[in-house]
Amino acid sequence: MSAYLRLLSSKRNQKLVHKKLHKLTKETSKSLIDYLFPPVCLNCLTPLEVPHKVCPDCWQNIEFLVAPLCEIKGTPFPFDLEPGTISAAAIKNPPEYDKARGVAAYEGTMKDLIHKLKYNDRHELLNLLITWMKFSGKELIQQSDLIVPIPLYKSRLWERRFNQSALLAKRLSEQTKTPYDCSIFHRKKKTRSQVGLTSKERYQNLKNAFIIEETKRNKLEGKSILVIDDVITTGATINSAAIALKKSGARSVNILSLAIVTDSHNKFM
Ligand SMILES: [Zn+2]
Image (cartoon, rainbow, N blue to C red; front, top):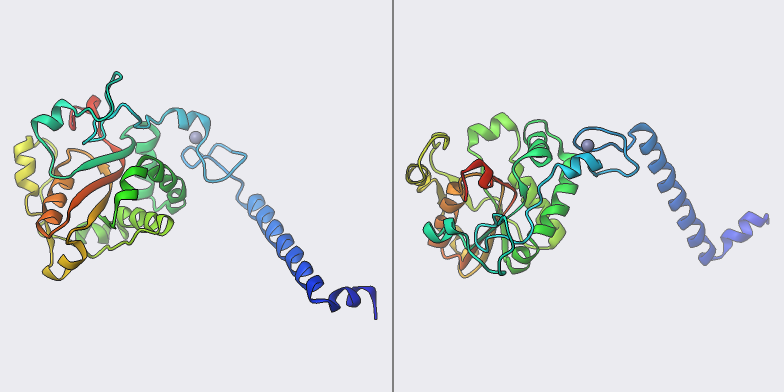
């Protein structure tokens, strides 16, 4: 019997050989992939050492939303305040949802990445975006019983082929082991664009925009719901979603988004 066959005759050795072969195959395919598709910045395509990241320049061009933040709206304060402070905007017009958080301000690299995900089908961005969402939404995710995405209208779904909020929500659910349901909401009517409307008009425009069927009530009754949206612009969409969810029995409704249009755009604060 050759030395090789003798080596394979023991089960332990067979396992070791399999393990080594598996590792070798993995390493070979990894270097082949790296050779064929060298890692680049997910935003500007500058070559990088590691895959699924953005380059230092693009990173610097992201305004991550970190404390101090409005406890309710998740919008940044320009100076240090006690944790739990609520912005003047949230006191004046208390939102229907409980808390909203976003990864970054809707500008610079984050705006570019969202655009690429939405309109250019760049699904390879999801891993990085989800990592950021898990960090920014840690507290909200821990409290959640169910994750639901904001739906698109059927016509828009047809144009874009996929709902980016549903993709984010599904991936987040898989990684955090939190239940997910993309069939909770339906869009009732196609609303006109929110651009140029006053806050009262925006509210009227989106009031009753979402329907939740009676059969879904048992999924929501007494539950803490985490709604996923890509960008929070005026807050009218998420307010409308929160009204519908609470009417159907949800105990609390929190919102997690990739980006929030912040004070500098004079829309959300
Ligand atoms: Zn870059």
